[in-house]
Image (tube, rainbow over all chains, first blue to last red; front, side):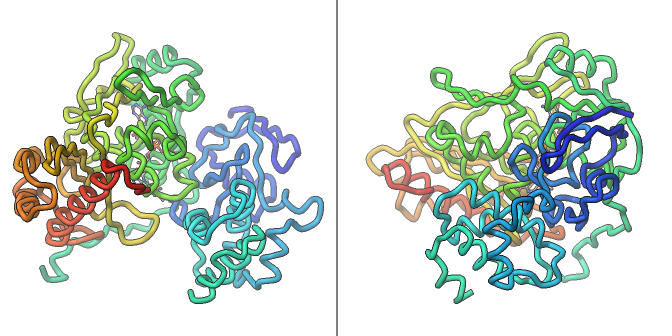
Length: 161
Length: 308
Ligand SMILES: Cc1cc2nc3c(=O)[nH]c(=O)nc-3n(C[C@H](O)[C@H](O)[C@H](O)COP(=O)(O)OP(=O)(O)OC[C@H]3O[C@@H](n4cnc5c(N)ncnc54)[C@H](O)[C@@H]3O)c2cc1C
């Protein structure tokens, strides 16, 4: 067992974990943060995306021991001061179907909105391409992200598909 | 090629939710400490960098190391620096760092193209350039750009360093000349001063390994190709230089039909296979197209045009 301490959604966490424990399982099973989803387990679906020190990474390919000393953010930690612009836009645009991929899309959208002032539709595609939505609800998701980033640009293109 | 000849994928039900075995785990804080661990454990140990190849393989029990050495806490192996006529890149540099590097964009444009095309932002935040090379996939996207820029690699062990041209590094799928006690420490790349470079690839979906890829470095004088270097990915057991085609390109007018004829020689230099991603025939065909496309981009860059 290895003692690790890190912050999750602003709260300090201290745990003993085996070196082969994955962050995905620590978050879901030990910390009850079930917004982080297990999809493919091999890095392709992106549904386990979390922000570590503000950068998106995949919890299914991250050892828990590796985030020692880091700041981890999941969707549960986003809405502490009320829903964010991104979350509101997802609701308004109906960007949720079955909901499984929604937390990962929200986190990537938050990351995009924080990193780029006026993202283009190509930026939105690039930032979101690492998350798969098996309901194929991409059009409304793209609309929501553009809305949240207060960028009207490219909106027409989304409507055309 | 009939469909029945395409080898089936071996889909065994794997639980990819966990790593299904335990190992001894080390987090060296310095290069010296890492090299001592490698010296002690040799082929029983695996270096863990970004884990985007290694952890996938460990989940599937394709590799089952007794010892895992996580080298990511060694922070002086993550850098991109200009050094005279060269750019030096630390092995633990993330693909995302390379994507955001003005130095790489300016002096190694083909490498910049390649990293932008790799995986997703999440993957590029985790994956390292050293891991991409040491994993030694024939589809490793950083390899063709580095090959056309005459990259050298520095391999370190407790006994000291050795420097090799990248052309001598790969041996076959998953195989390199790296000894169990060695770590890839640095990649040294020649800057493009006289010429320019570009990289192109085709894959099935946005986040996927290449069906085929190509990089070219080219110098052009008065409309004639003075020097060209070509490298190809996913069309042979390892990423390779197409030296014969390169020599035929030298001296040709860049916009002439002879260039197209010369590119046909690529056929003799590659040995693609049919697998789940593509047929060998398509790989043969598309390789030439990719080289031509890359040549066009590199030439546009050379003329000072904006391209990526
Ligand atoms: C969804 C997905 C998409 C991907 N897309 C692409 C793509 O488009 N193009 C592409 O080329 N690859 C792709 N990959 C593969 C992978 O992300 C890259 O090869 C990556 O660069 C590997 O780096 P890493 O740091 O994660 O390596 P790791 O998995 O940590 O290591 C890989 C291997 O190299 C060894 N190793 C690592 N660093 C060193 C070192 N410094 N010295 C000696 N040995 C070392 C390890 O022991 C291991 O055997 C993808 C992977 C996934 C999961």
